[in-house]
Image 1 (cartoon, helix red, strand yellow):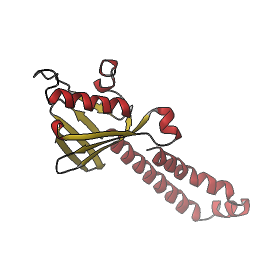
Image 2 (cartoon, rainbow, N blue to C red; image 1 turned 45 degrees about the vertical axis):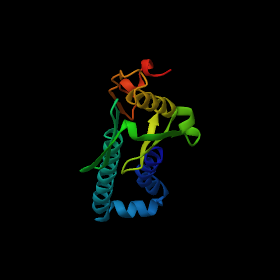
Image 3 (cartoon, rainbow, N blue to C red; image 1 turned 45 degrees about the horizontal axis):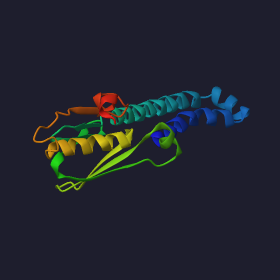
Length: 177
């Protein structure tokens, strides 16, 4: 997401850089001809496409949802504006959970990826750009232990829904040890 944001900012600044680098004589010539209207329409369309790109990225970012319950792990991924994929796996099929934080910015901001290896059809779930990946890993392990009967037959109901912005009950202190 960081690289997408940086790319978006660079593309938004590109017309200003072009105008700054344009020689004054060429700018005066364009101002007195029909090219001025054509350039205004071109850059207007350019900025409309940039805002569409920004909106599509925002929708993709905020509509990716991960749900961990005492029975299932559900991954809802927004692929594009009109396409999403829902994948779910029973919690008892979890074989391994790994978390990874790569890079200097993710390390300082404490976000990364959580990969869940399962014994099902979809062998690997990947939660990308998750706040506090180590905490999420612990929550999944705790839900797994509760699901296989680690509490003497009683399972604790963990209904945890999280969004990428770090809100939701998953990130309350009562779930972290």
